[in-house]
Length: 225
Image (cartoon, rainbow, N blue to C red):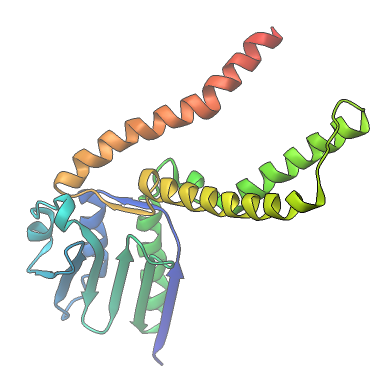
C-alpha cells in the first residue's frame, strides 16, 4: 500500500542554517538524491549541489532567496516561500508508517523555526482597523448619549465625508499591511547578508513592541501604584 500526504501550511518562519541542515537531513532518503534549488528576488532560479553550497550563498538583498525547495526524488518535497499565501508545502509518498513518521518529524523541526513575533504576524490589519472603528463608534455614541458631543452636518456633505472615510480606511489598511510584511515577514532565510538584516530588524521589532505595548503598559501599572 502506498500513502501520499500533502501539508499546506501558513507558518511564520525564520530559517537559520542549523535548521536548514536538519530539514535537509530529514528529507534525505536512502537511494534518492537530494535536490536543492531556490527562486530569488532577481527572478533567477539557482540550483545547489549540497547544503554547504546553499549556506555559502551570499544572499544579498537584490538576489535574496524567496523560495526554497528541498526534494528527495519523488518521495519527499518541501517547499518554503517568503511571499505566497501558503508558504509551506510538504508532500511525502511511500509506505504508510514511513509517511506519517517522516511528516511528523519534518513538521516538528519546522516548528522550531517560528520566531518570537510569529503571533504578531497573524494580526489581521482589517480586524485591527475594524476594531478601532467600533471603539471610536462606541466612544462617540457614549459622548452623544451623555450630551458631551453634538454633531451638526448637512446632507450635501455627508456623502462626500463617507467616500473620504472609505478611501482613508483603504489607504490605512494597505499601509498597515505593507508595514507588517516589511517588519514582520512571513519567512526569512537567515543565510548570508540576510542574517545581518534579520538581526538589525529584530532590534527594530523589539523597539516597536516596547513603544506600543510594553511602555504604555508599564506606565499604566506605575500610575495605579
